[in-house]
Length: 274
Image 1 (cartoon, rainbow, N blue to C red):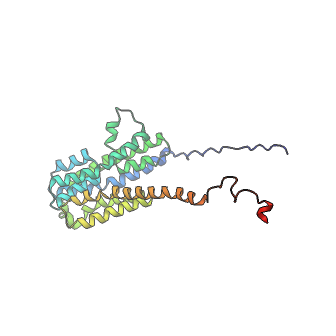
Image 2: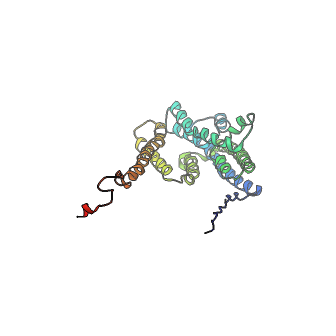
Image 3: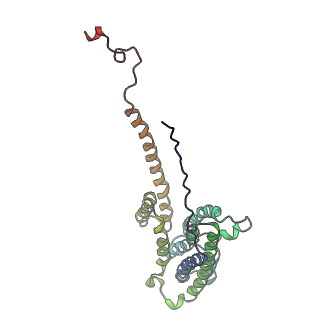
């Protein structure tokens, strides 16, 4: 028979579809405007708990992470200790450092630009940037989202702080819930696998259980224990699963082969048959 030669063809992965600049700008503006308008709620809430106009605007200009800002003024409004409130806001904002590690590789900015870009590393800019297929559109999405959100957030913060007296009681309007609601709306689509959903659910349970027991601001810190707890359980399950295939292979291998010359392995002779 003639020898048959197997020809293998290597299929290359199709490149990701190109995204037009107009589409990137449209998405970035949509996110920036939608979230930036909630700065009004922060300005009203911050002024309602007793912070001055300068303090309120300084938080938006220098901190610029909405969920942490709302956590700070929310804890102060509930009568929490300022240090505890600041600690809760700090740990909530620490997630941006992990965003920065990922975005640093995606954006590829020079060392002189990174300190300025780091100020815009938040949930919204990270989501828009990571959704782009290449570095050029990633930089475009990051810049447009960051600029739009930063300018609009600070303008609406100023407007909210100035109009707080006209609105009256902020609790009657429920504006203190606007920030957490926006944060949850952005977070929910990012929970794609079971581990992330379990960690988020456990964090909610920890907050609900400890909220009536611990001082204001502390339950937020306790909820941060949900992530390492879920990861520890997942790691133990992973080690247990890794041992199972080896055990299965040992069981399926059957009894060891007998050496030649044993009664079971040598051919039967006439004497044996007799």
